[in-house]
Amino acid sequence: MSFADLRAWIEALRREGDLAVIDAEVDPYLELAEIHRRVIDEGGPALLFTNVKGSPFPVVTNLFGTIRRVDLAFGPRPEAFMKRLIGALDRILPPTPRALWGERSLLWDALKVGLKQVPASSAPVLGVCRREQPLKGLPALTSWQLDGGPFITLPLVYTEHPMHPKEHNLGMYRMQIFDESTTGMHWQIHKGGGFHYFEAEKRGEALPVSVFLGGPPALVASAIAPVPEHLPELLLASFILGDKLPLVQDPHGPHRIPAGAEFVIGGSVPPHVRRPEGPFGDHYGYYSWTHDFPVFQVSHLWHRKDAIYPATVVGKPRQEDYYLGDFLQRLLSPAFPKVMPGVSDLWTYAETGFHALAAAVVRESYSREAIGTAFRILGEGQLTLTKFLMLTDRPLDLADFGGLLETVLARFKPETDLLVIDKTSHDTLDYTGGRLNHGSKAVMLGVGEPVRELPAVYDEGPIPEITAAEVYCRGCLVVSGASYAEEPELAERLLARLRQRETHWPLVVLADDAAVARGQTSFLWTVFTRFNPADDIYAKTHLSRHHIGYELPIVIDARMKPGYPDELIPQDDIVKLVDRRWKAYFNV
Image (cartoon, rainbow, N blue to C red; front, side, top):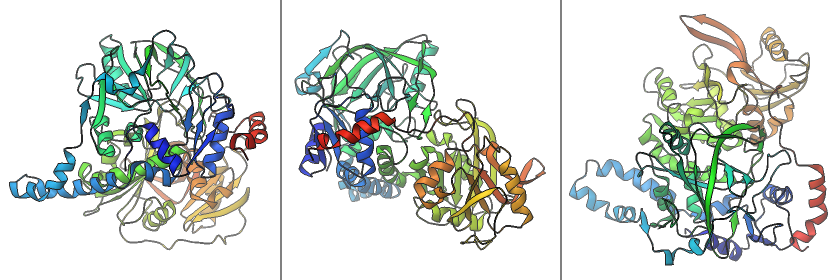
């Protein structure tokens, strides 16, 4: 079952008993976000705040904060249809009358995918138009105390290529509200909207932008989906929705807009104008600092007469993006072998902010084929921002990182199977490279038959300067000692001591707290958001004909380093306020 708009989705949650309505007055400055974080940590319901301080609009959050809600929002049809579609390609290409007739039910369903124009009278979003101070009273959230201001956190930003208007992009890029008619536009590198702006700016032109809030849940999913650059996100939304997406012409703008949206913000981003944006507590679980970004000049705002403002809160995993990301990976994974021959499965890890870690099951039909596939993966769309890529040719559940890591470590040959590439791009939100958008990458292979037995219990005795050691999985040991600020060379000394005692552990991670080994979420978030491969991987090396070969063990220094942004921690007085008011929120 799919839902045509936000309020249909909210009513379904109400019927399911999966919506909490909070009538007490709540401040969008820090208080609302703290309530949201506690509820999502507990696997609790979606939240509808009906009395938001300083705004006439109610706010809904946590719409996708559990596996159950994501499954309810989209149903099994999109995944099943995608598998049918991919499975049918080999049967209908090249097309023949007999093959097409055999897939007639599939083709009939495919004809439902598309866009349809509706008249203004059938577009609730055109209920009210504001052209003076259009953003006034919008209940944008300030989620963390160091945030640079209130942000629109669930914007669906629509743009069209300035020279090819049929090529559009729908992406989710946070928007800091500067005043009642101006916001930031956080176009990161390798984002479709940013490419459109790049082309417009080269021509000295402003880029028209429409920002949708609300509408079908399928719109939200399509906006964050890691699809190829030229795949139209509005068509993906229709695909997930299972019906044509209704659009109406914006009477005051150049774009067609979703007829069922709650709000649409129209305007443009002028060329060669930048303004400091941030800080912002982001989905990596840290603050991203202030940097110059383009500016969105708002000309008008449309909204339903009884509009509901959708928002989300990001921070340490697991948040809503975790559950949405997993759904999208399940949805799109059948297409990976068609897009990237040699890849049978691929997974990026929400626990690391997605771009910090990816893994794939690949073909190794001849020696070193996996290396070529690694480069193919690193050249595909947003996967170009991957920091650490792990590959195996063994079929397994990639979502189980411990199982993957054991599989790779049992087969990993350090002299040939680790590649570290310096001076590459990094995700804009990853600060481990020491410079915005710059860093390094690593590829680790584990293919073929096992070459070693992996230790499962640490029994090698105390290690000087190491105060704790815990096993994450067979072959991977996590240890802790002094902080990086106190002992920046500890990882190098640790490597020397492990080599001297001829340790059986192929991979040792140095963390600020070895207890992160006790769970996948804590391990992945801590380790892969706190190291840059070229700086923080330690091993004995050999250089031969421009190839660097490594010897075991491999040590990764995943401690917090000077210059890294601060971890997100709620403000004490807000924590106490929410503690005190908790019963008032939920009438208990």
